[in-house]
Image 1 (tube, rainbow, N blue to C red):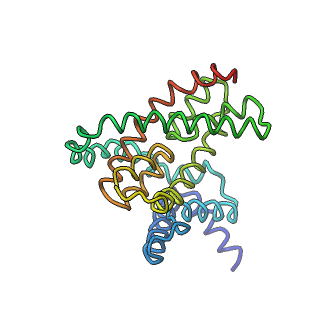
Image 2 (cartoon, rainbow, N blue to C red; image 1 turned 135 degrees about the vertical axis):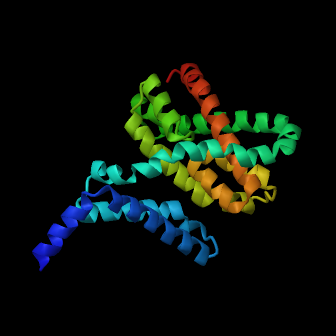
Image 3 (cartoon, rainbow, N blue to C red; image 1 turned 45 degrees about the horizontal axis):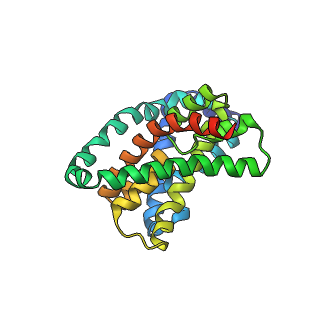
Length: 240
């Protein structure tokens, strides 16, 4: 009986549909848990989903390539989902025209702070130059961050891990921390989360409100472009 079950699992594990179904199912369960706990920060659906999937892959001995064969459709949808961020932002066009100056200032300060603080902390704990260069673009979305890391002599694979960790941390702590600090405007909260925690933070911002999500998506895109320019400049100025 055990041998038969093993054969069935081996067969199913090699089918793309299994891992797509598992991914969607786990995320749906994580969303239900998030809502059931009244959006408790530690019940963040991305955090729970990633943890559950990693544990499942380890428990079943499934390599990432096999998993990605099934889950790549979700990866494909990232492109259309990113483009679709323009729709809620368009609905906020009037507010965006009024706020372009404070948004520009906040973007510049947030981007510089994210890069400089990361390099300062890394230098303080004695990280080597290659690791520092991998850390520098951690607050932008993964494809951009990996491209920056490759160009400046970092490790793109390490950067990808750090970007995901940064996004999850920002999604879990960003909105609650901003509330604690007294911020009530959804635009301010969304933009701050987008600068600090890219796409994962933006998903959390949309759960907060459409306005927060729209400006978080704007911040994610603008910060990606600005970081690509600022990282080499800051490294040059600091001799990194």
